[in-house]
Structure formats: structure tokens, C-alpha cells
Amino acid sequence: MFKALLVAAVAAALIAVPAYATPSAVTLKGEVGPGFSIDVEKAGKDLKAIKAGTYKIKVEDKASIHNFHLMGPGINKKTGVPFKGETTWTIKLKPGKYTYQCDPHAASGMKGTFKVTK
Image (cartoon, rainbow, N blue to C red; front, top):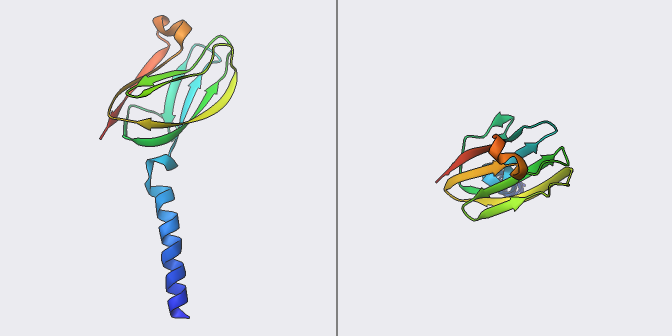
């Protein structure tokens, strides 16, 4: 009986640990609009730096006059300007600088950056 409980406990630990210990368990949030704002957040805070790894990013595009465009080492993903809604991307962030912007309004300052470290 003890051996069965021990095996079950070890199996449960092996299943649970990766879900909390890997970057892919972290969901980032990208948001554009409805006004002239754009941001990327992690756990409700503005993202400035993050470790390299695979992440999910939930993009909320709240206006048909904007888009959400994420660019950086190995990534060039965007929503369409007429698109309004939510989408989730799985992205692999490599060390370097990433820029997110609204393409039609980037020159007006509707953009931001974050750094990815090793």
C-alpha cells in the first residue's frame, strides 16, 4: 500500500511541476485600443523584461482602426487592421529586443518594447 501511494505521489509531482515551472505556463497579454494605447503585460504589469522561452500571448484587439504587431528575433506576427477581437499565439522568445506596435499609428507613438534575456 505504501509503495502504491509513493508511486502515485511521485507521478503527481512530475505532472504538476512542469505546468508551473516552464515559461509556457505563463500567459502574456497584448492589448491595443479602443483608444490610442497599446501594451504587453505579464501578471497585470507592464512587461519590461522576461526570460527566453516559449509563451502564450493573448492579444485583445479592441478597435478596427488598429492592429497589434509583435516583432523581434524570429517573430513577426500581427493582427489585421480591420480585425477586432481576441487571438492567442504561442511564441518562442529568444534573447534580444522586441517591439510591439500599431502599424498605422506607430509614428504617433503607439508602440512599446521589452527585452528578452537568457
